[in-house]
Amino acid sequence: MTLKVLAVDDSKTIRKIVAKAFAPYDCQVIEAENGIEGLAIAGKDKPDLIILDITMPVMNGTEMLQKLKAQSNLKDIPVIMLTAESGKENVINILKMGVKDYIVKPFKGEQLIDRVSKLFTLKPVQVQESEKPSCVSHQGDITIFTLPERIERQQGPEFDTMFQQTLKGMADAGQNKIVLDLHKIKEVNMFIVRLIIGIVQHGQRARVKMHAVGSGGLAAELKGFQETSELVFHETLDAALAAF
Amino acid sequence: MGDIHQLDLKSIAVNSTKQVFQTMLSMSIDVAASASDGVVSGKRVVGSVGFAGDVMGNINISVPGGFAKEMAAAMLGMEPDEIEDDDEVNDVIGEVSNMIGGDLKSRLCDAGFPCQLSIPNITRGTDFQIDTIGWVRHERIGFKKDNNGIAVDIYIKSVA
Image 1 (cartoon, rainbow over the protein chains, first blue to last red):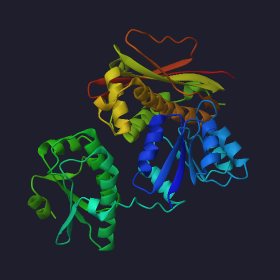
Image 2: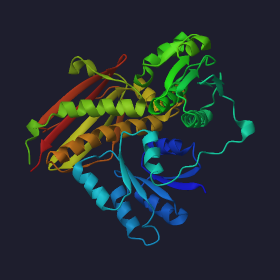
Image 3: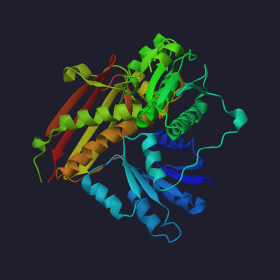
Image 4: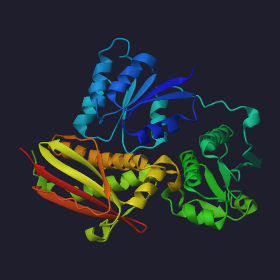
């Protein structure tokens, strides 16, 4: 069943980041920009989970939470607070109000998903086999994950999920060597860089040994980011395979 | 209640600003060699949040207009030329201000200065100056990202 998530935040940017975090999963994200809107939508749509900001105009998150807990038909909806305020007293007060968890901004979408995964089983969005681009191949015990020349922005979460599934398959098979083949990528932009950073971070968390194949320009670009600064680039796939 | 003169406002602002830029924008920023290096002039955007309670204050984050657009694009996972209007930029600068201000507010509360945070507001333009009156402490911290300056100004005074 699709998980219904209500994101209440006055910042459209934060609502977008929350929606993007849930995009690879079978979730419907509904948005509200203050506590009054949030309460109205909660009453109408009965979400399974509420992600709630604190500092908002019209009605803040604390007040919305109090009103939510006062309504018998809404009080059991789990709430995760997303707040820029991490003071000890503030955190204690939030927890006393019966929230399931809280996340302090700044945050990454992955952190949100980690926390939500403790409350719900998130199912990856099912992609038809015929629509799946083939990215994964094997050379002995080494997995090769190849990104295509062009990736549309909306496909980003799909490739991210595919990489995570590849890592899971490797872990199940007891393998830990992967080549990230980026040689087809010609146009480097922030979207591609962010996608690669996300993929590399998944690899780091899974503790796999990773080498990359790609142009000198891409390698230089990625060296400038902390997350990918230590990724070792090779000019050819053979060189990357030989590096293991 | 403690003494606001004992608070290490600079360290708090440096840590939270660097963390917000790194986590939300995937941007590493450096503290400028001197506060004057971080001065932002010309077309610029300023995000401000206030806090009020046992301590009152304001925190302003000033960035060049073009860089503000780059920040918006980075946070939204877009290209700068895909940012179509100022609202998206304002929202991102407001949220960055909220996160930096929220961290400072939290540290003030933990240090015995309970206070509440305001929602952010945005000032943008080319030829303006922000003057402040009556604050007991003012800290300016300059940062650099490539050729762009970022200035964080903190003004506080105790009320009680």
